[in-house]
Image (cartoon, rainbow over all chains, first blue to last red; front, top):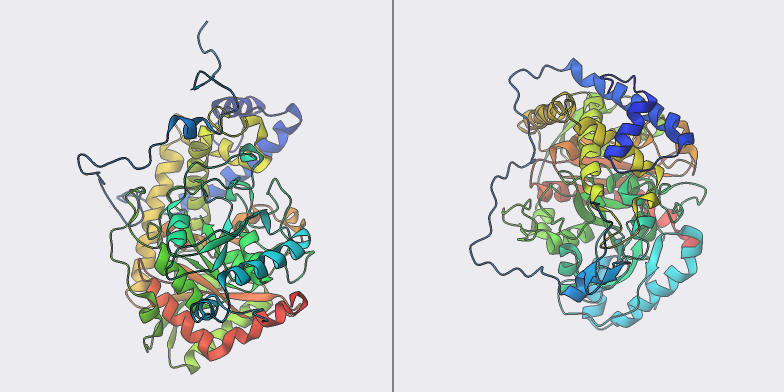
Length: 101
Length: 460
């Protein structure tokens, strides 16, 4: 893929494929322009010096949160609850597309 | 009994004192919601009366943003992907509210997946601003803001990733509090940017915001990112007599609409008159917060929305709207092989700089004061004129969102078109108490210039 904001049509189709999204041919140019505009905008971060700066993932810097051994899982669904919103089920299971021939 | 405009706190006293029953209160808001919702589109789903528990919010009907999972009640996040989704479980926030005795009047409209600042990206049509129905209420918690503003609910729950509580609160003339990241559980909230998302109250008064925060704040074993810090008594913190130092960042006073700037300057004079100190400070240009937020949030969106495959629940990925697709694609791009360091990691490093920058200022002042958004409510459809619309509207909200610090938006007057203007107080981590204290004092001093009462006369 192109490194800068110069995204090609091919790049857009590749990104869409990675994101598992179908996009219409008529919209490719729109997405290309919008993505390029955003990528161009965020280049302003290059103005700041980040040598020796550590990245932050969690704002209040929590680390390593564990459950105690033997903690009861109160969030478990019954099979009926787990399936209640599925459109396609068979024998109390989700039906998915075949992934291997 | 006419209860129009009565605050949550006063309603609760009336219910406890048996001056009115919770059922009467509920049917009052229910019939108002039915009457005005066709004009405002604030609610996607209206809910029937249910028996409630006894607690600090006994009998109070609340409007809940539609990205909070409510057991057995349709929850869509305003996205057609989840058009028929009936959650089999309750979010921690709504569970805590129910346990405190609250009732739910309806689920409110929002930008689809909370992607936006106007509710115009909702797959169910935009909400309208009660002040002027040709205008947007802001977003993404626009339905919640409109519901409180038109008194279709005495208070509401919203959620904020960057500005989604403060900006609609400002555009609708109400109070909106974004707590510290991790102060309130995200369990059962349909995830947008997981390192930013914060549920919070949207209310008519500061006291009401404190009352709701008291119920929803605190550690939750179901959300490992919640803080274990003790939850203080917010009402006590709110009512202490304090003289505070406010810092006004010069960089945040640039590019404001003239009326907004004028109202903020007038509010600074009010704060000084009340005996507080106001000093000018300097922060990093907020444009960097926009970039950090844009990179991190889009990346998290692409990951969070990857789970919607239509297999276990909801519709397939072809049901996503353009805004969601755009965000997922940008996130996918910045997270793809070879780009992670150039985008995501760099943004996380600048997040560190933004945190340090705020910490430097908070060592010198109690609160930072600014406008929550550079302009007042725009016309529906007008956003198309602004490239980067959401980020432009939230430019003044994004530093606190990126850092995960708390902030409030409160009304501070009307612009020359008669639309409400907001004022923002930003505080340090877990210092919601000081924010509420300052906002409460300001409310006592000014009664928020009667903004809300003026705006809703047509809904009486």
